[in-house]
Image (cartoon, rainbow, N blue to C red; front, side, top):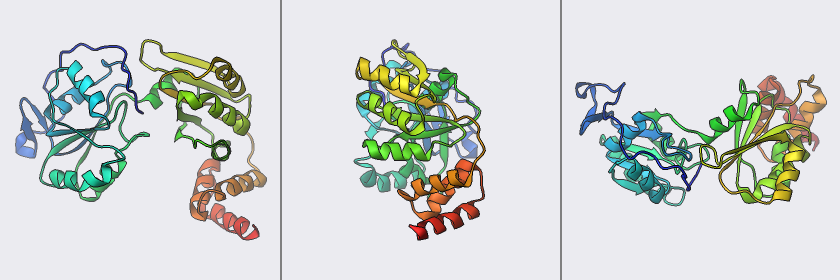
Amino acid sequence: MSSKDPSIPADSRSASQTHAGETSAGHGGRQHGSAQLQPGLHIVSTPIGNLRDITLRALDTLAAADEVLAEDTRVARKLMDAHGIRAKLSAYHDHNGAERRPGLLRKLEDGATIALISDAGTPLVSDPGWKLVRDAADAGIRIVPVPGASAMLAGLVASALPSDRFMFCGFLPVKSGQRQREAKALASVPATLIFYEGGSRLAACLSDLAAALGEERPAVVTRELTKLFEETRRAPLGELAAHYQAEGAPRGEIVILVGPPEATETSQDDIDTALRTALADMPVKQAANTVAATFNISKRDAYQRALTLKADG
Protein backbone atom coordinates (compact mmCIF):
# COMPACT_ATOMS: atom_id res chain seq x y z
CA MET A 1 0.00 0.00 0.00
CA SER A 2 1.48 3.32 -1.01
CA SER A 3 2.41 5.82 1.69
CA LYS A 4 4.35 8.94 0.74
CA ASP A 5 4.38 10.77 4.08
CA PRO A 6 6.55 8.88 6.60
CA SER A 7 6.09 11.16 9.58
CA ILE A 8 8.38 9.72 12.21
CA PRO A 9 12.08 9.91 11.28
CA ALA A 10 14.31 7.00 12.05
CA ASP A 11 17.81 6.63 13.41
CA SER A 12 20.19 6.95 10.46
CA ARG A 13 22.40 4.08 11.59
CA SER A 14 22.12 1.05 9.31
CA ALA A 15 21.75 -2.42 10.70
CA SER A 16 24.51 -4.95 11.16
CA GLN A 17 25.65 -6.43 7.87
CA THR A 18 25.39 -9.97 9.23
CA HIS A 19 22.56 -11.60 7.27
CA ALA A 20 21.34 -14.59 9.21
CA GLY A 21 20.06 -17.53 7.26
CA GLU A 22 22.11 -17.03 4.06
CA THR A 23 24.35 -19.80 2.76
CA SER A 24 28.06 -19.50 2.19
CA ALA A 25 29.57 -18.33 -1.11
CA GLY A 26 30.59 -21.92 -1.76
CA HIS A 27 26.89 -22.88 -1.88
CA GLY A 28 25.87 -20.39 -4.54
CA GLY A 29 25.77 -17.19 -2.50
CA ARG A 30 27.37 -13.95 -3.65
CA GLN A 31 29.39 -11.63 -1.46
CA HIS A 32 28.38 -7.93 -1.44
CA GLY A 33 30.68 -6.09 0.91
CA SER A 34 30.18 -7.79 4.27
CA ALA A 35 26.64 -9.01 3.50
CA GLN A 36 25.88 -12.05 1.42
CA LEU A 37 22.78 -12.62 -0.69
CA GLN A 38 21.60 -15.41 -2.91
CA PRO A 39 21.09 -14.40 -6.57
CA GLY A 40 17.43 -13.86 -7.35
CA LEU A 41 14.51 -11.48 -6.89
CA HIS A 42 14.15 -10.34 -3.28
CA ILE A 43 10.69 -9.00 -2.33
CA VAL A 44 11.42 -6.57 0.50
CA SER A 45 8.79 -5.15 2.83
CA THR A 46 9.31 -1.55 3.95
CA PRO A 47 7.66 0.62 6.66
CA ILE A 48 4.11 1.87 6.22
CA GLY A 49 4.87 5.11 8.06
CA ASN A 50 7.33 4.90 10.91
CA LEU A 51 10.75 4.55 9.31
CA ARG A 52 12.01 2.44 12.21
CA ASP A 53 9.58 -0.34 11.28
CA ILE A 54 12.08 -2.07 9.02
CA THR A 55 13.81 -5.37 9.70
CA LEU A 56 17.55 -5.86 9.98
CA ARG A 57 17.33 -8.36 7.14
CA ALA A 58 15.58 -5.81 4.91
CA LEU A 59 18.34 -3.29 5.55
CA ASP A 60 20.99 -5.88 4.75
CA THR A 61 19.22 -6.85 1.54
CA LEU A 62 18.81 -3.27 0.31
CA ALA A 63 22.44 -2.49 1.09
CA ALA A 64 23.79 -5.56 -0.69
CA ALA A 65 21.51 -5.83 -3.75
CA ASP A 66 22.92 -5.11 -7.21
CA GLU A 67 19.82 -3.00 -7.90
CA VAL A 68 16.74 -1.88 -5.98
CA LEU A 69 13.48 -1.53 -7.93
CA ALA A 70 11.21 1.11 -6.41
CA GLU A 71 7.67 2.22 -7.19
CA ASP A 72 8.81 5.81 -6.56
CA THR A 73 12.56 6.35 -6.26
CA ARG A 74 12.06 9.59 -4.30
CA VAL A 75 10.18 7.76 -1.56
CA ALA A 76 12.73 4.94 -1.59
CA ARG A 77 15.64 7.36 -1.36
CA LYS A 78 14.14 8.97 1.74
CA LEU A 79 13.96 5.59 3.44
CA MET A 80 17.47 4.56 2.48
CA ASP A 81 18.97 7.92 3.40
CA ALA A 82 17.39 7.57 6.84
CA HIS A 83 19.27 4.30 7.31
CA GLY A 84 22.53 5.31 5.63
CA ILE A 85 22.11 2.96 2.67
CA ARG A 86 23.59 3.75 -0.73
CA ALA A 87 22.16 1.52 -3.41
CA LYS A 88 21.50 1.64 -7.13
CA LEU A 89 17.85 2.68 -7.44
CA SER A 90 15.64 2.42 -10.51
CA ALA A 91 11.92 2.86 -11.08
CA TYR A 92 9.60 -0.10 -11.60
CA HIS A 93 5.85 0.58 -11.68
CA ASP A 94 2.67 -0.07 -13.66
CA HIS A 95 3.58 2.40 -16.39
CA ASN A 96 7.04 1.05 -17.26
CA GLY A 97 6.75 -2.57 -16.10
CA ALA A 98 6.14 -4.15 -19.52
CA GLU A 99 9.13 -2.31 -20.98
CA ARG A 100 11.47 -3.11 -18.09
CA ARG A 101 10.66 -6.77 -17.40
CA PRO A 102 12.64 -8.37 -20.27
CA GLY A 103 15.86 -6.58 -19.27
CA LEU A 104 15.36 -7.33 -15.58
CA LEU A 105 14.75 -11.00 -16.31
CA ARG A 106 17.97 -11.17 -18.32
CA LYS A 107 19.89 -9.68 -15.38
CA LEU A 108 18.33 -12.17 -13.00
CA GLU A 109 19.09 -15.08 -15.32
CA ASP A 110 22.71 -13.89 -15.38
CA GLY A 111 22.87 -14.14 -11.58
CA ALA A 112 21.99 -10.65 -10.41
CA THR A 113 20.59 -9.90 -6.98
CA ILE A 114 17.64 -7.54 -7.37
CA ALA A 115 15.42 -6.19 -4.59
CA LEU A 116 11.85 -5.07 -5.22
CA ILE A 117 10.12 -2.60 -2.88
CA SER A 118 6.90 -0.59 -3.01
CA ASP A 119 6.27 2.87 -1.59
CA ALA A 120 5.26 1.28 1.70
CA GLY A 121 4.48 -2.12 3.15
CA THR A 122 4.73 -5.47 1.43
CA PRO A 123 5.14 -5.39 -2.37
CA LEU A 124 2.45 -7.00 -4.53
CA VAL A 125 -0.29 -6.25 -1.95
CA SER A 126 -2.31 -3.67 -3.94
CA ASP A 127 0.98 -2.52 -5.47
CA PRO A 128 2.77 -3.26 -8.76
CA GLY A 129 5.22 -6.11 -9.03
CA TRP A 130 3.34 -9.39 -9.29
CA LYS A 131 3.88 -9.69 -13.05
CA LEU A 132 7.64 -9.48 -12.55
CA VAL A 133 7.45 -12.11 -9.82
CA ARG A 134 5.28 -14.34 -12.01
CA ASP A 135 7.64 -14.07 -14.99
CA ALA A 136 10.70 -14.60 -12.81
CA ALA A 137 9.17 -17.68 -11.23
CA ASP A 138 8.23 -19.04 -14.67
CA ALA A 139 11.88 -18.57 -15.71
CA GLY A 140 13.08 -20.60 -12.73
CA ILE A 141 14.52 -17.59 -10.90
CA ARG A 142 14.62 -17.76 -7.11
CA ILE A 143 12.02 -15.57 -5.37
CA VAL A 144 13.04 -14.52 -1.85
CA PRO A 145 10.42 -12.98 0.46
CA VAL A 146 11.82 -10.56 3.04
CA PRO A 147 8.76 -10.05 5.27
CA GLY A 148 7.90 -7.00 7.29
CA ALA A 149 5.28 -4.27 7.66
CA SER A 150 1.85 -4.54 6.03
CA ALA A 151 -1.04 -2.09 6.43
CA MET A 152 -3.49 -4.95 5.99
CA LEU A 153 -2.12 -6.92 8.95
CA ALA A 154 -1.50 -3.84 11.07
CA GLY A 155 -5.14 -2.85 10.59
CA LEU A 156 -6.34 -6.36 11.41
CA VAL A 157 -4.50 -6.63 14.72
CA ALA A 158 -5.65 -3.13 15.75
CA SER A 159 -9.28 -3.70 14.77
CA ALA A 160 -10.29 -6.14 17.55
CA LEU A 161 -12.34 -7.99 14.90
CA PRO A 162 -11.99 -11.79 14.50
CA SER A 163 -8.56 -12.57 13.08
CA ASP A 164 -8.73 -16.37 12.82
CA ARG A 165 -10.11 -16.05 9.28
CA PHE A 166 -9.85 -12.94 7.09
CA MET A 167 -10.04 -12.00 3.41
CA PHE A 168 -8.07 -9.19 1.79
CA CYS A 169 -10.21 -7.51 -0.88
CA GLY A 170 -7.95 -4.63 -1.96
CA PHE A 171 -9.59 -1.52 -3.41
CA LEU A 172 -13.28 -1.70 -4.33
CA PRO A 173 -14.42 -0.19 -7.66
CA VAL A 174 -14.72 3.59 -7.87
CA LYS A 175 -18.30 3.63 -9.20
CA SER A 176 -21.02 3.15 -6.60
CA GLY A 177 -23.04 0.55 -8.48
CA GLN A 178 -20.06 -1.67 -9.17
CA ARG A 179 -18.84 -1.20 -5.61
CA GLN A 180 -22.16 -2.36 -4.15
CA ARG A 181 -22.34 -5.37 -6.49
CA GLU A 182 -18.85 -6.49 -5.52
CA ALA A 183 -19.58 -5.96 -1.83
CA LYS A 184 -22.83 -7.98 -2.06
CA ALA A 185 -20.88 -10.89 -3.51
CA LEU A 186 -18.80 -10.84 -0.29
CA ALA A 187 -21.76 -10.52 2.08
CA SER A 188 -21.78 -14.16 3.18
CA VAL A 189 -18.02 -14.71 3.43
CA PRO A 190 -17.46 -16.07 6.97
CA ALA A 191 -14.40 -13.93 7.61
CA THR A 192 -13.27 -10.42 8.45
CA LEU A 193 -13.11 -8.44 5.20
CA ILE A 194 -10.23 -6.00 4.64
CA PHE A 195 -10.30 -3.15 2.12
CA TYR A 196 -7.98 -0.30 1.18
CA GLU A 197 -9.50 3.10 0.38
CA GLY A 198 -8.54 6.71 -0.18
CA GLY A 199 -9.78 9.54 2.02
CA SER A 200 -11.77 11.27 -0.72
CA ARG A 201 -13.91 8.15 -1.30
CA LEU A 202 -14.10 6.86 2.28
CA ALA A 203 -17.60 8.12 3.17
CA ALA A 204 -19.10 6.92 -0.12
CA CYS A 205 -17.39 3.55 0.18
CA LEU A 206 -18.64 3.05 3.75
CA SER A 207 -22.15 4.02 2.66
CA ASP A 208 -22.10 1.43 -0.14
CA LEU A 209 -20.70 -1.21 2.20
CA ALA A 210 -23.49 -0.47 4.67
CA ALA A 211 -26.09 -0.81 1.89
CA ALA A 212 -24.59 -4.10 0.70
CA LEU A 213 -23.61 -5.72 4.00
CA GLY A 214 -25.98 -4.13 6.50
CA GLU A 215 -25.90 -0.92 8.53
CA GLU A 216 -25.29 -2.80 11.78
CA ARG A 217 -22.38 -4.90 10.52
CA PRO A 218 -19.43 -4.25 12.87
CA ALA A 219 -16.58 -2.40 11.19
CA VAL A 220 -13.38 -0.49 11.85
CA VAL A 221 -11.57 2.31 10.02
CA THR A 222 -7.85 2.60 10.69
CA ARG A 223 -5.92 5.60 9.42
CA GLU A 224 -2.26 6.67 9.36
CA LEU A 225 -1.13 3.43 10.98
CA THR A 226 2.26 3.67 12.76
CA LYS A 227 2.36 7.44 12.19
CA LEU A 228 2.03 10.35 14.60
CA PHE A 229 -1.74 10.80 14.11
CA GLU A 230 -2.69 7.12 13.99
CA GLU A 231 -6.45 6.60 14.41
CA THR A 232 -8.67 3.54 14.92
CA ARG A 233 -12.45 4.07 14.90
CA ARG A 234 -14.79 1.16 15.70
CA ALA A 235 -18.54 1.31 15.00
CA PRO A 236 -21.27 -0.26 12.85
CA LEU A 237 -20.94 0.46 9.11
CA GLY A 238 -23.86 2.87 9.03
CA GLU A 239 -22.48 4.90 11.92
CA LEU A 240 -19.02 5.06 10.37
CA ALA A 241 -20.49 6.21 7.05
CA ALA A 242 -22.43 8.99 8.78
CA HIS A 243 -19.38 10.08 10.78
CA TYR A 244 -17.09 10.48 7.78
CA GLN A 245 -19.86 12.08 5.74
CA ALA A 246 -20.21 14.75 8.45
CA GLU A 247 -16.49 15.15 9.16
CA GLY A 248 -15.31 15.27 5.56
CA ALA A 249 -12.50 13.38 3.87
CA PRO A 250 -9.68 12.40 6.24
CA ARG A 251 -6.04 12.49 5.25
CA GLY A 252 -3.67 9.57 5.05
CA GLU A 253 -3.70 5.89 4.15
CA ILE A 254 -6.86 4.06 5.20
CA VAL A 255 -7.77 0.44 5.93
CA ILE A 256 -11.44 -0.56 6.30
CA LEU A 257 -12.22 -3.79 8.14
CA VAL A 258 -15.67 -5.38 8.28
CA GLY A 259 -16.53 -8.13 10.72
CA PRO A 260 -17.92 -11.48 9.54
CA PRO A 261 -21.68 -12.00 9.27
CA GLU A 262 -23.61 -13.73 12.02
CA ALA A 263 -23.62 -17.48 11.49
CA THR A 264 -26.79 -18.67 9.73
CA GLU A 265 -27.79 -21.77 7.84
CA THR A 266 -27.17 -21.46 4.12
CA SER A 267 -30.21 -21.95 1.89
CA GLN A 268 -30.28 -22.73 -1.80
CA ASP A 269 -31.79 -19.28 -2.34
CA ASP A 270 -28.69 -17.74 -0.72
CA ILE A 271 -26.42 -19.71 -3.01
CA ASP A 272 -28.48 -18.83 -6.09
CA THR A 273 -28.45 -15.14 -5.19
CA ALA A 274 -24.69 -15.19 -4.77
CA LEU A 275 -24.26 -17.04 -8.06
CA ARG A 276 -26.44 -14.57 -9.96
CA THR A 277 -24.49 -11.66 -8.47
CA ALA A 278 -21.16 -13.25 -9.35
CA LEU A 279 -22.31 -14.21 -12.86
CA ALA A 280 -23.05 -10.56 -13.60
CA ASP A 281 -19.31 -9.80 -13.52
CA MET A 282 -17.51 -13.14 -13.89
CA PRO A 283 -17.27 -16.13 -16.24
CA VAL A 284 -19.26 -19.19 -15.14
CA LYS A 285 -16.31 -21.16 -13.74
CA GLN A 286 -14.89 -18.21 -11.80
CA ALA A 287 -18.32 -17.33 -10.40
CA ALA A 288 -18.90 -20.94 -9.34
CA ASN A 289 -15.49 -21.23 -7.67
CA THR A 290 -15.98 -17.93 -5.82
CA VAL A 291 -19.39 -18.94 -4.47
CA ALA A 292 -18.20 -22.45 -3.63
CA ALA A 293 -15.39 -21.00 -1.52
CA THR A 294 -17.77 -18.52 0.13
CA PHE A 295 -20.31 -21.16 1.18
CA ASN A 296 -17.90 -24.08 1.55
CA ILE A 297 -19.77 -26.20 -0.99
CA SER A 298 -18.65 -28.43 -3.84
CA LYS A 299 -17.16 -26.59 -6.82
CA ARG A 300 -18.78 -29.11 -9.11
CA ASP A 301 -22.24 -28.53 -7.62
CA ALA A 302 -21.78 -24.78 -7.77
CA TYR A 303 -20.65 -24.99 -11.41
CA GLN A 304 -23.65 -27.10 -12.43
CA ARG A 305 -26.03 -24.74 -10.65
CA ALA A 306 -24.33 -21.71 -12.26
CA LEU A 307 -24.80 -23.27 -15.72
CA THR A 308 -28.49 -23.79 -14.97
CA LEU A 309 -28.99 -20.22 -13.73
CA LYS A 310 -27.15 -18.78 -16.73
CA ALA A 311 -29.25 -20.87 -19.14
CA ASP A 312 -32.45 -19.72 -17.43
CA GLY A 313 -31.31 -16.11 -17.86
